[in-house]
Length: 243
Image 1 (cartoon, rainbow, N blue to C red):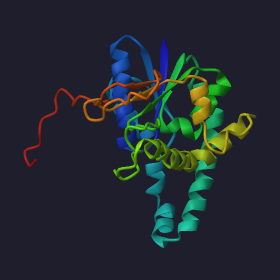
Image 2: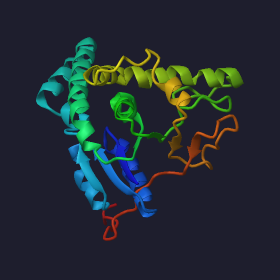
Image 3: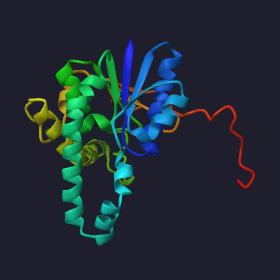
Image 4: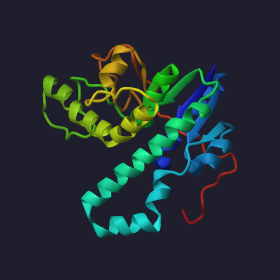
């Protein structure tokens, strides 16, 4: 089976997915990591196949143009510029990703899925698995990760996941809208793809330890807590003397 893992963001966002790819490769799967060019060396050094999504968002923010914009402190201009850049990037990826996914039997992705990958997988009829490093599935056992730990009670704990999921979706929705338009698809729900993913029985992998955050009893069988996705240090790595 050929698995493609789609990951985006900074190194802290991408590295766990490279570790997950290593785990899948170690049990016999053929794995390709589809991420920004910044992580080509990290991917290849792990013995994985690499495919480029282009320049990372992090690299974009380091350009002189973006530094001037962020230094201006004009929040509305920053948001408009980020939305425009996100849409432009998504339109390009909607055209190039089908080629990069050629031969793929399964896509594994997390936040990158919300930004258009779930829609591309749907268009290409490629099975998909969700993968996150924090819980997004509502539960009555604890509150959402972005919510302060308070004595909410069962119902409010479950409801606390709704604003968190909306924040994640609305921050990536422009990219998904642009992707679906480019692919000739109808727009996704304003409230996000969560209900549709659950209806389609799309599994979720969670890359953290059940000993740190026990798996809630009210989750269904689609939700799997696997343990952390950590990369082993290089074999020739030694602790720096000054450290």
